[in-house]
Image (tube, helix red, strand yellow):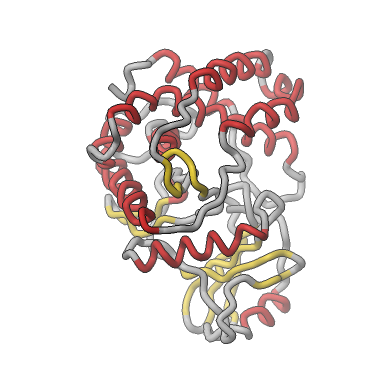
Length: 314
């Protein structure tokens, strides 16, 4: 979450008039994250999240995202569906951007998850994968393995302004991952970004799964790998004792033998993906954007750790 597009109180008040949600009381920009503009909105009837979709989200994909949220909510998952206006419309336009008003869920995102929290979060991902078994929608992974080398080339030598030799390090790692990438593992609709800041919790209970705007159809085990790279380490990339193992325990025995065997390369690939997108944002985020940039080198440290611990998923 972040704020790139500023919304005036007057424009937001007129926007809310389309809904049966009460009158605007207050709105506050949310700086965390890097993808879309988000506001915490309080009205006389309750609390909501307003999301304005920025350039990385294709407006043509929004119906898929809305259908997925509705499906998961109907399956009983703690997922916030978009709120329809009085005409039944979920996707609006505000300040020139596609926009949605989304139900607010209680809970907080953890920065240093405990093993108990990782276990229940892993179980929530398994529940998500089970729930999409009968969901027909899909979209390709626009940030899947085929997109990483073009993104590396676009970053180019500017990567070395982040850390000396970074381009060569990522180039070599990506070549190894591309050569070993599996293409015949089970696929389904995945979240593809289930970081701790996209899971709301109260103690060790999961109260919300949010921010599905990278959701796509891709390898199920890749979703597990993405989650492992984000949960098993602290924000700077230092491993958290017991957390990765607890996450895998929570996900349970649903992974096939061949999926578990592929997790080391999938995790290294996930490290490259997030290193590159963080680096791109680091190099290109507007100076006046209300956004917390995330350190690309935190994912280089994770990549180094997976290289040194091929037994991590044994």
